[in-house]
Image (cartoon, rainbow, N blue to C red):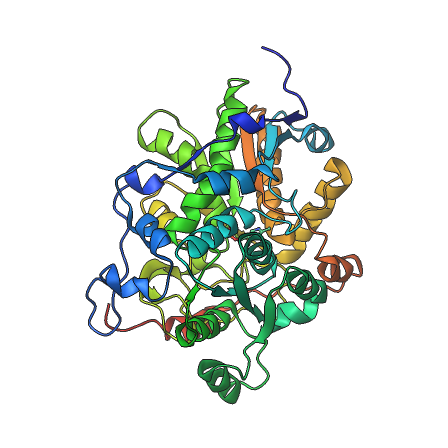
Length: 454
Ligand SMILES: *Cc1c(COP(=O)(O)O)cnc(C)c1O
């Protein structure tokens, strides 16, 4: 067997031309319910909100592989395939016998994996004849990615950006505007729901849940517009499966099967996409790979949340989704620097976690930034704070191997670059970052906002 190089590249020709739909392999993922009567939402009920093709994908539980249209393959070819990197330098610094690999998705201007779904969703919106789309963005990566994709496919875009993030990351706004998007800090006075949230909570820094409500309302009021979401939903996990398919293909060139796969989890899209084809093997009894979701201790939907039907947004405009959730009224501490601040979790990831196929861990942000700095100083790449949750967990697993002498193979998702997170790194470097872990009483307030009926 040849030595594994630092980077395992695929050629453009080798880039997968089909996405992997884990829904076709796993036990049934519960669908949307109508909050008014608890009945399933028919497909027609979703057409006014989402793009038609993405609804088909959302509900597709039969086709394991779905063709990627040529236009999206061309777009992907501008920045994919992305490499799998062997973290030799980090392994050495840790003195671990474990073999660490990461799949790096930060090599595009938007800086994260989000472009994989942005490209697909912008393409389908344009193909459907829409004039524009609305969306929310938290830390800003999704808004940036969608701005790039909408510029490319010729669509208008309105982005509601969580207010605290827009203050912490002013250049994200400039980036989105450069690609032609209109960016509005949320909550804002431009929507009824924004006005209501501001009246109840004048000093609020906002949340993803609020921004989603505003984006939904604006899409509903604008002709030729639909709403698009950058995480959580099944079709987003489908688009992100390109990460897992490429990683699997690259590792198979060297006969490598990971013992552990680790991903950070905000809404669950990169984790779901990274593990998708590997999980299929596991569910079919073809591998014994272990899967770990990593979340911030300040927004612990898997580790401390409830598996329940909940709204996807604070304004309670979305249908009910069965997921691990902290309640749509949960607002994470404004001290929390990274993204990963959504109250819920992908229904696919939630179901796999509930069935025991994925385990979950949470870390405080100072521990996460310590891992980020170690990674930057050894591997060179400056990681996004979100991605650093996966790094922290991979380091812990590698240190556990050091203690036992096990030579486990560990793959983790390095979802993005930290170039736009200088304020957070500055706070950490100055020793001014602190950890806030919600108390049980804090969480109870969020749970009290769960719908009572379902
Ligand atoms: C958005 C984002 C995440 C979290 O989103 P998921 O849907 O859970 O993948 C993680 N890392 C980066 C860099 C992001 O931009």
